[in-house]
Image (tube, rainbow, N blue to C red; front, top):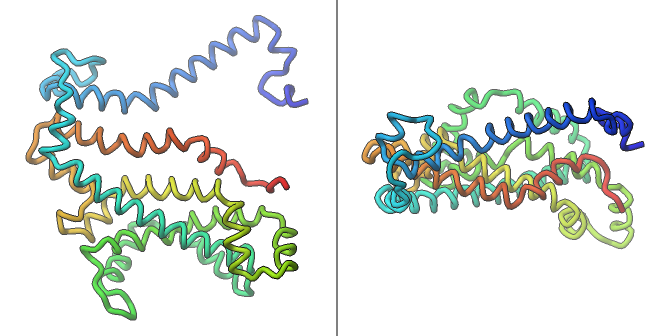
Length: 294
């Protein structure tokens, strides 16, 4: 029965006049997706190892017309201090990911497992924030960071200013809550019969079962933090604390175009590599929206 659920039935696949056009169409679509996905990345690599005039005169050339300049990558790393700014970016991404994991798992656990009376109201409030444009909340968020309520502390020019706001991601909270909803309730009842408290259920039962979705949240948080530009630009005015996304435009003012593109390629290489390494876990975690098999 599963073979009959595709675009073509098994019987149609055996017919040559149907199978050949279908395979050709698949190849064409796959080639188009490959060009759209890898094309910009490969072009950036070509521009990073080409002379500046090459990228200006023949920007759409497939290969460098002159000598391949692999030293551009080393120059960008040293002259543009790309390595230093990548270190700042890694610190920001790691802190954001850790904060996001703490917030989304605890919030999801409260809303999905503990289920307080006001849980439905809080879930609705979290859902509403997804419809608020980010630019609308930018000024209130900046004023909050400028003078943190209760403690009245200025968090600008500290990593806390870029760690805390993205950690409270409504999207991450909702997808983790949805995953927690799919865990059979019998697991929680059995754990409570055995004498496990709420904290024990959370640490010993819920978190081990939720490793796929936690990997998704971790990867999404890292990539989102890695490419963020506007918020770090506002709250990190000290150049020694800025990530690579903020530093690259400044590097462009004092270096040639090919060195700038080499720095951009190095900055792009890490998130792409992370996705390629963890793509199986990422896709599996996204696809786990149903129940968990016992």
